[in-house]
Image 1 (cartoon, rainbow, N blue to C red):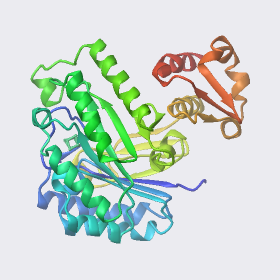
Image 2 (spheres, protein in one colour; image 1 turned 135 degrees about the vertical axis):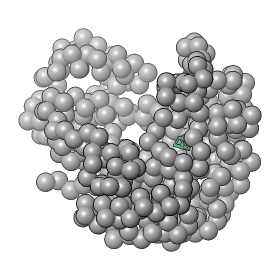
Image 3 (spheres, helix red, strand yellow; image 1 turned 90 degrees about the vertical axis):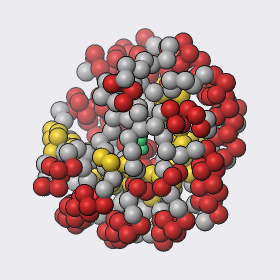
Image 4 (tube, rainbow, N blue to C red; image 1 turned 90 degrees about the horizontal axis):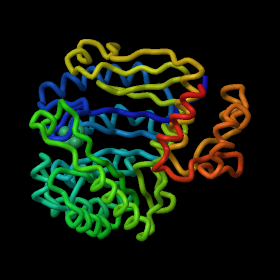
Length: 363
Ligand code: SF4
């Protein structure tokens, strides 16, 4: 069996629920999170058995946990993080403080992903965020003061009440933060969110397209590489953990709601905290992927980045010849692909879905 290089740990708690969010999460309570931690400890001790190249603690909001709870998680992960080259934790500006930053440093965390979303305080309030942009600036300075400079920020567009001028100002403000990685999210209103229940609608598609174009141009003009459908970075600052997903490598996920993929086996732990506390082995999904499923998923994930798909690796893994098997698709639309050094990628990530449909139909 190949070595699992990537570990994801999900913290399913938040201090409040943002109006657009439908992830697996609960409002933080010390008692519930302590009981969750007891089970998480058992799961980590029983399923983690390797040195991981990347570890990602996401959520939810990991920093909603107390200092002691975070310390307990980081101590549990310590035996598996000795060879870790990228160790990320997601933080929210309002629940991050200097004590927690020092703790992260002590346990080898070297990358921070911060939920910023916008620099417009009114807009932040209107989407249910608890922070303002001044807090973002303070916390970014604090991280840099402690030499945690590998920072990614999340930026949202197509938000209700956001117009092109507000977005343009947010881009100015985000650029001024001088961080090496930016993740971009377009709001899609889901029925089970606060926005969905209030009947709030998505912005017009044309406005959304204008916003996307603006972000794309301004970030590229400022030296960011659009290296994945939703991610931009300065050279050398790609998320190594996420590259693992996009290269279709195996990964292990622990905690409620976390997914794992090991060979052709994919499973997702139950997203119900109660069910998870009764046994971490409760699952929402547990399936064996067919060879066709794996091949298609591999193509779909690899084409998300500008680095594309490694042909040798693909051919070896599935005992096939990619260029021969998909000859008709590639030849009929040669200009859409970039083929060099035994890799194939999609030239224009904006038309990725259109291309993927053709691969799906041929599988
Ligand atoms: S967007 Fe993030 S912080 Fe807000 S509720 Fe969802 S997981 Fe929690």
